[in-house]
Amino acid sequence: MIEIRIPKEITEYKEKFLFGLTMRKFFSLAAALAICVPLFIFGREIISEDILSWIVILIAIPIMAFGWFSYHGMNFETFARCVLRFYTEPQKRPYRELNTFWESREMLIKENIALQKAEAEEKRKEHSKKDVRNKRRKK
Image (cartoon, rainbow, N blue to C red; front, side, top):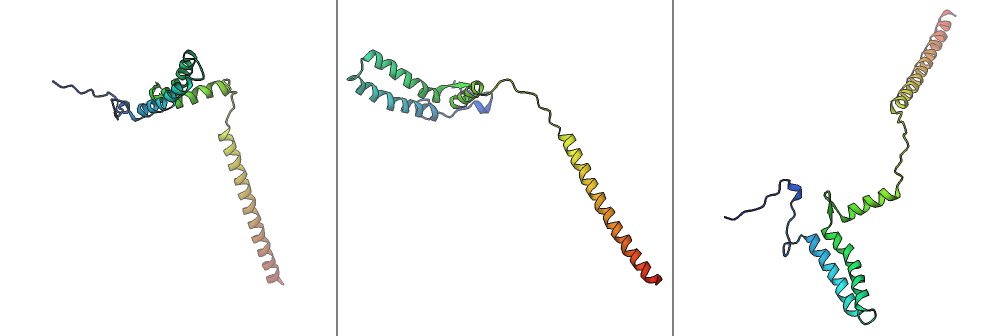
């Protein structure tokens, strides 16, 4: 009987491209081969094979990591970004209180005061106009 593996979580599914490799793995392998094989072939004339093989390995590891490395669902570049942020940004964050309630409350109070002043000014103007009219009528 043929069995098909069905992942429990749909986000874990990776589509296979060639030779059972995903596109990401295939292209990282191709890039590593395209860089390291010519380096080894042409570098043998300049450097001894022992040292050159270590150089090729050290160059191939990060290239291959882009395709194969996965940690808690993060790919290599996301993980590397998190590690860099961890070591470059300060870890002790000072507590700062956000007084959004009090700031908005003060802003509303200032707006209400401005509206009340404007209304009082309008009433004063209306009363002064009425007083002028009343004085004219009395004359």
